[in-house]
View 1 (cartoon, rainbow, N blue to C red):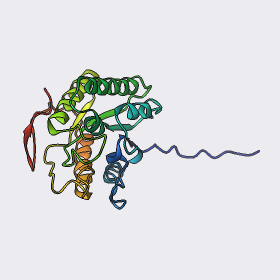
View 2: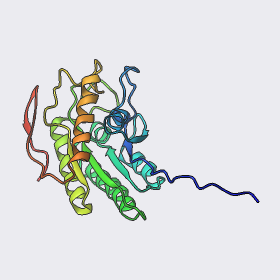
View 3: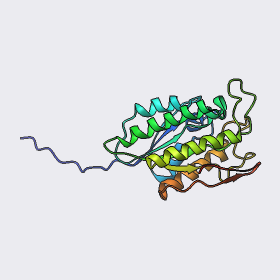
View 4: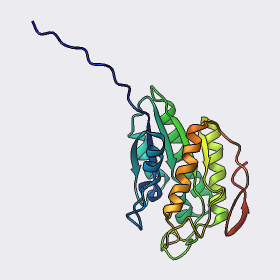
Length: 220
């Protein structure tokens, strides 16, 4: 008779699952810059799944999120604002489309059998608002308007807002192209996400200051 030896049950490690644009995907324009999801996972001893895709706008990110099935222990981080701002600017249509996409994502995650912790990242500003055809309608004011929408949707779904703009340094945290994070910028994002995971909550949005620009409102 064959006796099957029971193997000890191994608990699955917590995992950070990141969705968004090229800042999530990383490796551009400098392929040696490690993306922030990997930095977060290494710092906290978590697994990671990086679903970032360069050039993604909020509807693209929503489609990826809707195809994802959360598992117990997941922490979902969504960074999906910047390209909407750059391409559509501060327009009613742009903000409405962004709101719908965020709502779809957060509703899907809330309906999961094991709903994950959800972090909604508020993108910090860039310097190259012009110079990229098709993506020249953005501004700091437009970014703030979309952040207000994000805060409102997050509050409706009890998602946690992660403020990336506080302490953002335009000279140090952006790469040479004026759009993507440098190594220091990626670390800034990772530090904010780590802090949000370690101390969960939903802080009230407040004016953020970053070097190179006056304070701007980030929500109500």
